[in-house]
Amino acid sequence: MSPTGAVSVAAVGTYTFDHAGSFSGTQSSSTGGKVGQDTKLGTYTVNADCTATLLLSVYDESGTTLLRRSIWEIVLLENATEIRGIMTSLVVVLPAETPVPPIVIMSAQRLFPGRLGDGKGER
Image (cartoon, rainbow, N blue to C red; front, side):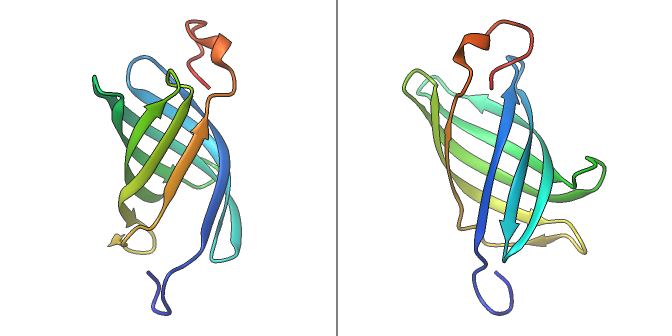
């Protein structure tokens, strides 16, 4: 939270997941009204009950400056074509590494289910 209270956050983007437990993506986001483009890299672990954990690092648009890190607890739905999740940890890296209490949820849908196994990952 900022000194004045909670900050509104919204984002939309795309991710590609491989079968080795890694993912990457890009998004446009708005944090407190400041709009920007981000590059995302991370890892994931899926459990037998279709729950999963995502470890996510967010970089600036160039992909070189780490801005923040987060941990997400998610559940896979509808044959893993949908994701629902909640952020359980958020650390803002710049200007100084600062843990922030997260209030963020996720809803995602697989857009290209026919691409599984093409060597390009899931999208």
